[in-house]
Length: 103
Image (cartoon, rainbow, N blue to C red):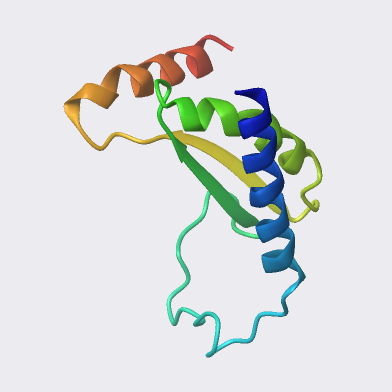
């Protein structure tokens, strides 16, 4: 099982490094919005992670994601947001909001 995880991690990282190495061009790879989306911090780039507490994939990607977040530039804000795609997912969102309120 560990070998499979290692293999999949290597494959994932090799694809992600190829994507990040590419130069993106407006109009070809993305479009500029006429009306910017409102973000939490107006002068920063916002990266928002949607996750589900009971998702094994979200759990497994967390260590890699945490390391990536530490390397983000100063003009970037990272926000973890629990996804609520059904009633079954609400408890995880409530848990996160309660833990943030207690801090």
